[in-house]
Image (cartoon, rainbow, N blue to C red):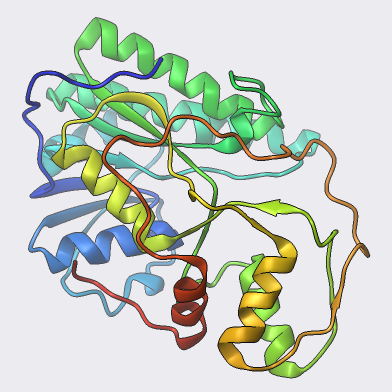
Amino acid sequence: MSSMSLNPLQTSTDRVLITGGTSYLGRRLAARLLAKGASVHIVVRPGSDRSRLDGLPGTPVFHEHDGSSENLIDIVAEAQPSTVFHLATNYLRDHSPAQISDLIADNILFGTQLLEAMRATDVKRLINLGTFFQFHNSDSYLPTNLYAATKQAFEKIIDYYSDAHGISSTTLILYDVYGPGDWRAKLMGAIRDAQAANKPLDLVAADTIMDLVFVEDVVDAMLHTVQENIDGGPWAIRSPLRSTLADVIKTFEQEKGQSITANYGVYAVPPRTPTPPWEGPVLPGWQPQVRLAEGVRRFLSGEEQNAG
């Protein structure tokens, strides 16, 4: 249930712990915090590729998690964060039987270990990320897939730790996040590459509705949540003006001055795609600053900003 804290929370972003810090969004959050002079601690698996965090405006402290609850308690005790940003997730649009164990371990077990570590070390502030797939053509919870069900299950576990142990949590619901320097195989990169190579691009229907949010706006939302002591949720981190796929293609054409051969309707929209995406309550006091045209311009230029 949505709520807002009425009392100031003893939280800040001066000293933080991030899970999922080697992800695209994690890198942008770490960069922003380091640019502000924060002490940034990042939980990683043994052998994790940290190279994508090269070139940040500061040096984060890495903590290798061996998978045990005891080790994670030691990590949180050493980091002593005022705020924990839980970005780590195992996203699977569709799962196979062999992937169920990892899905549960990554999205439920690890998060529960993190909450237990926070309880054991008296860390009280958690920012958690959810997905619009938790609302399949419904105003209330209805999972699109097993991934979304694991995200919701973890939220229920948060409820216990909040009620029993006083952990203040906020859940932010994310949509399609994009921005410069994104190495993921996503739509925006596919459009850019097809345009650059002057090759046709096979797509779903032109009128497919999309909710695209620029990465720095998402980082703004996370920091705003802490600074304004907003708790509860789920709060939607969504665009006020949604676009169709045809709108997105047209924006790329306008920004680069080059046409794109878009073969609409070659692919079907995947089964159980929320249509339209969930339109839940937006995070109070936050709104995206980067509109689609500017976002595409910055995406094409590769422009990244660490301060702000």
